[in-house]
Image (cartoon, one colour):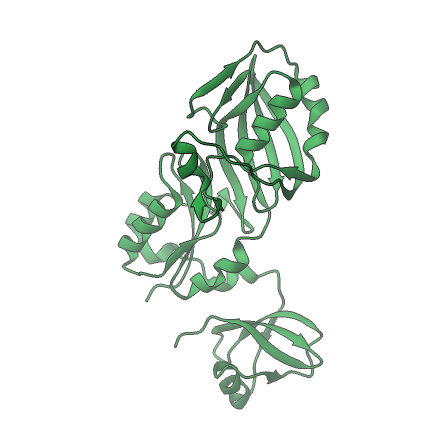
Length: 288
């Protein structure tokens, strides 16, 4: 059965779940999941986990992400992007220097109110479903981190391209909306391309057509996602058997920390934590 990770360059107008469904059909594998939803209008890096690799999704969702976004000033919409209904329009007279001056307000640890058009649930109901009925409810601000925020270029009198590196849970649409509000002219997101997620970049991404043509050959091994952790190979058959049975393994030569654990034949077995010379599995990735 196919196991591994495919980095998809998500096309516009596809949902992240549409992509998973397509890959599920191509590879004929039911276990397919993604890390980090992209809106239909967005394109770019969408890591898709297949087979046993789906066990790694929980680790992938919380990492840093990088985006290149189009900011359009002078336009306010109900969805905070250009696909929504126009609520306000304003004349724009904002220089690149004026925009640059407000960006520090949105860098570092900040509070962001989630948009109504989002999948966040309040009292069991998705905000987007409430918004589609023409209603709005109070949302609590959420703490997030903007690690880097810069202007790449000005593409028109009211249009700029921004690069943003941020934490999980950041809405770039809302960031554009809030920047516009800070400038006094309003703003929204005109385009969005994710260039990095879960440590994977656009240089590693493939198209759905590529997957259709090449299938399993494009799967990256699951342990690629954990390559920042040191590797440890279990040498003794008895110890490997204990590991495969979910038991702690003695490893007196391991310093405390997190490790990629491999069997004697090189198979990636699990992600484990070492403490006081004992390895305890965090998540197993070997077959049943």
